[in-house]
Image (cartoon, rainbow, N blue to C red):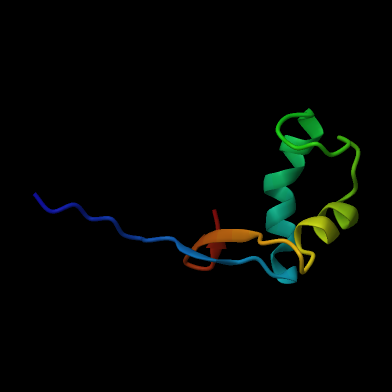
Length: 68
């Protein structure tokens, strides 16, 4: 039996233009006080400055131009 695995996500390095989608993913986790060590009240600008800084390796998975 042949499996149809399409669409296949594309993994790429996150760029500044991804900030809104990244925020939608990261914010609920941080706000809950879960996995990350950030203050739950950290603002979007500070959070994206951290995750998109040149010393970080932040990646996104994308299908059809939409970040998953």
